[in-house]
Image (tube, rainbow, N blue to C red; front, side, top):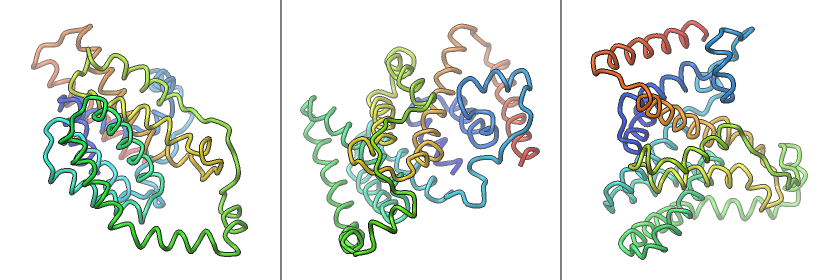
Length: 277
């Protein structure tokens, strides 16, 4: 998971040290990043206690998250340098998520749809062709899933069972502070992190759409899972990298001092996570 997250961020932002710090913050100091204003509590040690780290809970779908960030790494690599084999692998990994996490593959689906619209507008037909291959592989490997889904939704007890599992009719929109901050930062990405365009726009806008899928479908499927493991972590990772890069522009650091601070923060983050867990 660490390798997939870091690889994705480095590929997206071209900022290796900042990416490593962001991943460390999310995985080991994640209890302090429930919302942006928690940073104040972190700085002044105002927390009465800390919840379990998000990605180390016994029920945490770590391998779902690993595959998810693996797909994002492939997508980011393809945006930077389009190679067909990259999309073939991304399509295959996304089909694995189809059988394991509805929140992961639907978020990726929205991201792909937004990227498709971006490249269609720019008439980049080679990229459109690669994305159609992605769709073909995903659809082919997903045939058993969709056949089973068709049988399930037509079962007489489906509606009652779905409600007992928490699937309820709802169209009230949902937002998270990290996603809002992610959207704001994405508007300035062209100046601060130009390498992140256009994927960062697809990630931020797609996160809002995925979190609010029930507004379109009318069925709430415990969408807070998007925030816990997918849209929230992506937003937090990018916001931390963005803030670190912006801070370095405001306060230039020499290379030795920067390396010293990075190592110090890495040690602090991992130590805090180990201690709290």
